[in-house]
Length: 608
Image 1 (cartoon, rainbow, N blue to C red):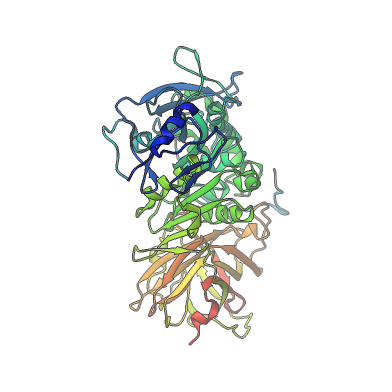
Image 2 (image 1 turned 60 degrees about the horizontal axis):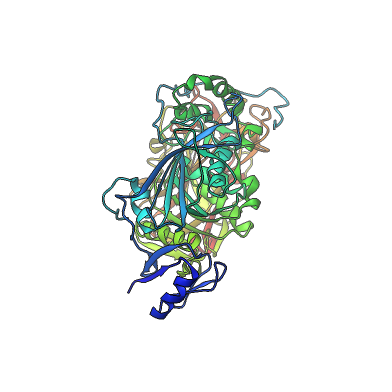
C-alpha cells in the first residue's frame, strides 16, 4: 500500500485528517506516518512512500531545467573578479509552495578533457638529495531518459538534481587547482546559494533564488566527483546533510605519492597534480590559466616526492573534525587508480570523530558497487534528506563483497577480530625464503641481493616463486591449513643496504596457488630517502644498513586453504614508480626483516 503525505496548509491538513492521512499543527512538529517518524519533514513537502522508499510520482517530461552561474568566494585565475561556477538545475514541476531537497554532483569532467596536455616522462633517473636533506615546506530510470542517470532516477522521486562544472572547466570561470581550497569553496558556493548565502544568475544576468528547496543537500560522485564532496564536508557548510563519495580521494598526496616515492595512478604513468589540472581546464580561454598550471608543476615537487605545504593544502584528513554531514562511502578493493589507502584512512578518521557513516567495499576496480548499491543509496538519501526512518542506521555499518561475489555484512572495518600478525623472513636459496610465524635466529651477516630492473613488470617478477631470480626476493608461508582472512593495512620492515644513494623500494603481497601461480593482492612503495617521514628526504649512505619501513595498500582478502602467502621484494615497479636506468643492488638481511599482516584471528592462522 502506498503511504502518501501531502503537506500544504494547516486548514487543508485538518480536512484531510478525516481521511486518515497524517497531519500536524505546525512545520516544527514531527510527522507520524504509520508508525514512522519523519524528523525533517516540513509542511511544504510532497512525496509518496512504498516499501519504505520514495516513489516516482513526478514526470521527467515537464521537469524544470535551469542553466545558471553561481558566484563563488574565490578568484582562482587572479582576474579581479570572483569565479563563477556553471550548474544545471533539474527539479520536479511541483505545485506552488512545495519544496524539495537536492542531490548535487560537482565535476571537473563534465565538459570533457584536454588530452593535449603532456604526461611527465617516467623513464628518468632518481634524484638523490644532498646532505642533510630538504626540510618541509609548508537502478531503473524513469522515462523518458532526458535528465541523465541522477536526474532520471531522483527527480521523479521528489528530489532536485544539480550538476555542476568545477572552476576552470566547461562554462565555469577560474582555473582548476586539483583539489585545494579554491575548488572546495567553488563547490561550497552552490550549497550556499541553495540556503540563501550566495548569488546565482541566469543567462540574462538576472539574479535567481532557490526558493523551491528545503535547503537539505546530499552530494554524490565517483573519483574526482566524489573527492570534492570529501573536501566540502570538512568545511562544515550549513545545509550539507550527507555525502556519498565513491572511489574518492581523501589526501591528494597519497594519490600521486607513496612514502616519499613519486607514484602514478594505475594506468596513468606520468600523471601528476599539474597534469590533471591541465586535463580539466576546459574553459574556452584556457590560456589564462597558464601561470596557475606552471606554478602547480613547481609546487607538486616531483624531485623529492616529499609531503609539503602544497600537499597539506589538499589533505582533507586535516579537517575531519569539522564534518557535520553523514558519509556513505564506497570503494573498489581492486582500485589501483584511487588506491585503497584513500578509503581506509578516511574511514578511520570518520570513526575517530564519530561521524555517522556506512561503508561498501566491492571486488571491482575504479567504479561503483553492484548488488544493491542503487537501493542503498536511495534509502540513504531518503533517510538523510527527507528524514524517512527506514532503519538505515540500525544495520551493520559495513557491506563487503567477497571473492566469490557474494555480499557479507560486518560490524566495522577492519574486521573487529583483526590482529596485527608478524611474519619473519628466513632465507633459503639465494633469492628465496620462508615467512615464519615465530622469530628466527638472528644472522645479521647473511644477506640476499636483488638488482633493480625497472623495465620488467611485477607480474613477471612474482612468477616461479621457488626459483632464484636476480631482480627479486620471494618469501612464502607454509601451505595454509585453512582460509585466512586479511583485513586492514599490511606493513613491511626491511633491514637493507643500497649501493647507490637513491632507489625505489617495492613490496608485493602475493597469493600462490598449489601450482605456484601468482596473484598480486596488494603492494606498497617507498623512497628510502624518506626513511624518517614523508615530509623530509635525507641523504642515505651507500652500502650502509638501514631499517626501511613502509605500508602497502589496505585490503580485505581471504587467502584460500591450500595456497601460500608470499612477500616479494623488488626495487622499481614498472607500472607505478619512476623507472631509472636500473642496476642498483639492494642487500636485504632477512633475519632482521619482517612483514606485519592484519589477520582475523591473529597468528593462530599460521600454526598447525
